[in-house]
Length: 311
Image (cartoon, rainbow, N blue to C red; front, side, top):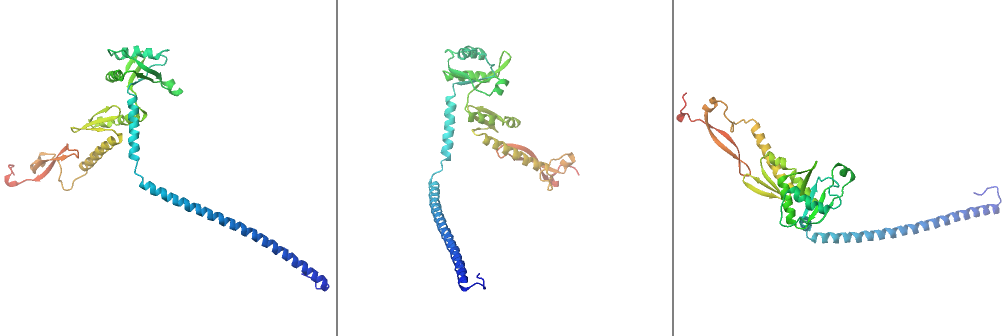
């Protein structure tokens, strides 16, 4: 602000300077606003580009969803191809023998010559043709396992018939005694098949508990005979579901028999006096699978007019 005591010319100069300073500040603000406006416009352009790209991606995603909906379900085909690959691998392993428990360095330098004389002597089998092997080796294992037990030997026979003959003889005989070790000879299966066989074998105790006849067929099929009906299971989960259903039925029947009956519809006489109070007719309860489960006695009121009992 101009000083009132100053001369008019000096006051005008001061006012002009202040106006120039204000003008300079306004020009600076206008420049800043212009710069900000330019930046905001640039951001708007970028946002517009992103919106355009998002719209394009949304349209592409919609097209992909439509194509997926129109595409037939291939999960069943994939499962079929997986099972076929597993089956082909098991078929290619048919001539193989897996020898378990043979101590390390027993075969010395030539494992093929050793197996040619060792297996016929151990299994006591005879053949018109010599036992020939294409190849044989010990499988790899980590150092900890190798220090606990010897590595397995995989031997590929030239003729798969001879491999089957040795495997059947080993199944019939069981583990062989060789020096101070037990030697087991088994067939060689793929990893999925070995896992499936292990799952089947884990259900053996439940089958034995129910006196159900069973057998594990190669490569991995469990055959079960229950109440005169035979069924094959290729999936362990199906067999486990079947056993769970039987357990549920047993629990339900046990619960019904243990719970007290108010109407006395199903009960058993415990004393001769109870028998004299009426007649009892046999009622047969049936399993869901068609077999008899248990016999119950159903009470019927006694007709005194035809009762031979004396009163």
